Image 1 (cartoon, rainbow, N blue to C red):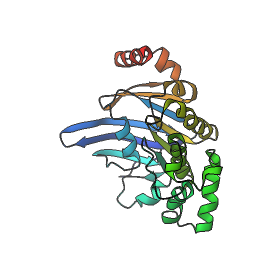
Image 2: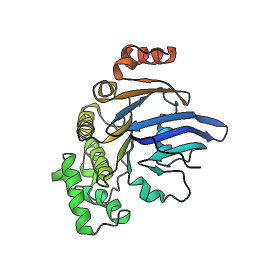
Image 3: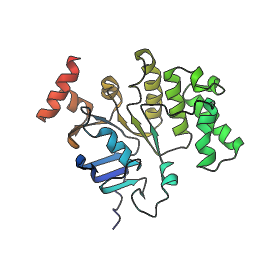
Image 4: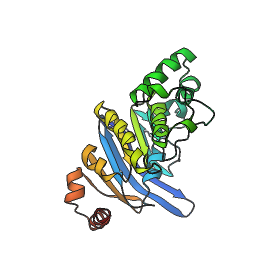
Length: 251
């Protein structure tokens, strides 16, 4: 029986388990995301953060549990997953751009192939998305002609061009040189201010403190604690959370 959506929650993940063979990576994770909310997911490497994101849009198949995104049951066999994924944009650590295509070509490919737009429609939307991430003047550049930060902003433009209801960010700045991180975080801040619902997995703790509505701490495949940035960073309740926050604050 399909889970009933909770009013006001645009993402509802319930009881998510994920096994890779004998490895139990997610252990009954529940995660809700409200409209216009930014949830930041933190935790040590290997705690299941990225796997959780990939289960939300079915890049990984959950072993059990339920996922609803904008009222659509993502795990229902009848759901057109390519259509459903238009609601839930994702930006990865690696930019995943086609090196032989221009920035505009990378942004418009899904608009034409998935959303069924004409080339003119796709180009109009693509130029608007590139302008939104500050790259209006780079539409004709290939990835090799762009910095890492610019390539990641093209990847964000590609995702937002489809007008998703939710954005997932999986370590979007971890492969960037430190001086390029700010431009990507700036775009994410702009998206936040525009009201985009977002789930962010990242080590950018300053961004989490300043921009997040809620911080979720994961360890060993489970959510250990969640709360406001002030609660998690300044007054964590659980010992594992305190140890993790203490460790990152020493670095």
